[in-house]
Every structure is written in C-alpha cells, then in structure tokens.
Image 1: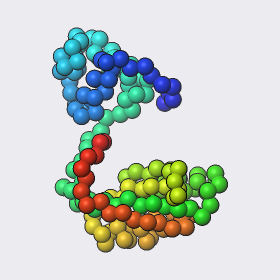
Image 2: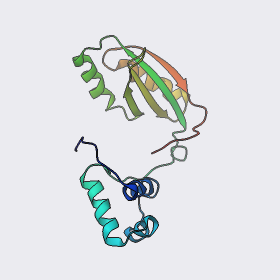
Image 3: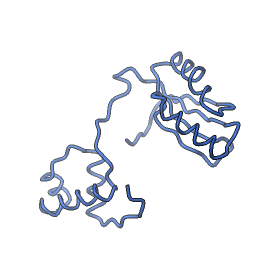
Amino acid sequence: MPSDHIDLDRFDREILRLVQTEGRISTVDLARRIGLSKSPAQARLKRLEAAGVITGYRAILDPIRIGLAHVAFVEVRLSDTREAALTAFNRAVLAVPEVEQCHMMASSFDYLLKVRTADIQAYRRVLGEVISALPHVASTSTYVAMEAVKEVF
C-alpha cells in the first residue's frame, strides 16, 4: 500500500465522504450526487482504490445487537519499551479478538486499547487472563464507556 500523500480535489473528497457512509452506493448514484457523469466518477473511484486511499469495503455491525455492548478503554504500561518488546506486544495484541483498536501513545502510558465485550464480567476475564498476560505488560488502567456519542467506522 503506497504511503505517499495523495492530492485530492473536491470531487475526490466528496467520493470519499459518500463511500464512507454508503459503501454500497451505485456508481450511477455516486456520479449523480457528486455532479459528474458515470465514467469519470467510476475512474476516480478506481484511482482512489488503486492508490490505497480506499483500502476496502465492509459490513458495519451493531455491537449491541450481537451482544457486545460493553466498551472499555485500557491504558497499558509496558515493563520494557525497546523495539523487541514493542514488536512482541504488537504481534500478541493482534490475536486478541476483543481488542477493537490498539494505539501506541506518546504519553505517560504506552498503549491505549479499545476493548469490546458482552459485559463487565467478560471484560474482567479478558483483562485478567488475556490483556495482563500479553508480553511485557506491567500495569493497566481501565475506563468504562457509558455511551458512544460519536463513532466513525
């Protein structure tokens, strides 16, 4: 995937806005809504995909309807922050399905995780048996979300 910055004009930005919220939009509807004919709109969409700006399309699930209503944010502090330790932690956290997001931080802690489970009991199990057992984890702090005001997928 290319890492270079891509210059985007207003048509490209509008295409990106629309496909983020309506991934199944037809090319005809996309073209109509951005004010281009079908062929140029389709060519722009293909260019954005080929350039790696659009990396894929997916179904967005309602976590509450599938029994995953509990969200916790976890600060993780590592006992070792040398490259080998960071790599080991990164690899291990990728295998934890309850971890929706993992961000390395420039802060007083090393990582911030977004963890989604069915309830607090399931979260306690994941924290105690899985997250705390990840390589080089020294300590954690948990913040439980009461409500999602805005989530962008």
